[in-house]
Length: 454
Image (cartoon, rainbow, N blue to C red; front, side, top):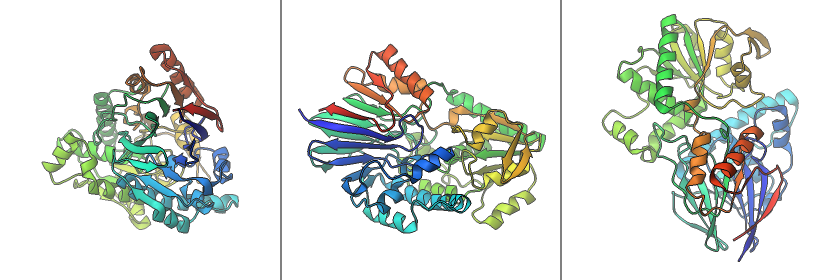
């Protein structure tokens, strides 16, 4: 029998900041994710703190996917002395480079505003990329006595679970688990042989709308807003949510289910990420690949206008108010969406569509909770526009999906560590796993350390 120590340095008691360390008997230190804390001033403070481990001692970093709450402190890790290997799937590496460089712009604004130093710069990102190797799903990586493979989590393009095998037993770090079936991606791979699970719980206490229901609601919201002569604003995460929505809108327009209205993709980052999607269409599910094969490709419909530059973005206001604007950031914490919200939130004909998780403290969450006035870029903005939420477009499994995922390996798994959720979500999922499956489950505290037998 061998042993390993598992430590929870981020993503415990929190949705963001994913950062887990597994140390084996032979001294190998495997880090899974190195994400940024998001959503509040407290989160900003956490990002500036020194790591609770020595980055120089880390053997390798495995990255589940390219969302900032899973990669956002990699530059800091490198700056602070990490010189091991970084592993991910090929799409994750390409997207991560764009995401990290884009994040520097956000961090720079915060630095100027608060007088805090940057936690990393483009040189640190460049050094990280030089350490970064890509590995396809299911190809083993041997480090010491551990064998590690990536398994498809179905969350975003290239997303993966990290499966570590020691002495014939497995610990699986789920990363984020996809809300399968997805319009674009394959379903989350089945896991039937995990000894330990470290799993997400973003929607551990909630159930999403059905796939047909969410598509019908999106169609209704677009039709109602265009009929009213208003603008539909969609704050969208640059990775996955944007591409799924574009895919759905393109399909609706092709089948005359919604009016042919201009669709502005107003995000340089989302444009770059969308181009990566075009490159890795072999990572799509069979239905999406067939549709692409039968048409001229994807994300190429005539109504789609990509506004990369600031000047192009400003010209959006010259277009008729009957339009759709998809812009970052997904929680309205920054980015071009703020300019559109400032302009169109006072308009009762317009609609703000929230199609993903809104963290506590974010402007998106304030709007979702029904605020009638908000402050945007220092100005008081009345909220007369309709604010609607479609939870079904979340890229995360809901409570039922998470429970079903654990059920696949319930006969074998010794313990489930529930992480990456607000405390209420995590604790609800813990209780459901115990009650419905009879499996030992806990929601670890931030900084907690546990000894595991292999």
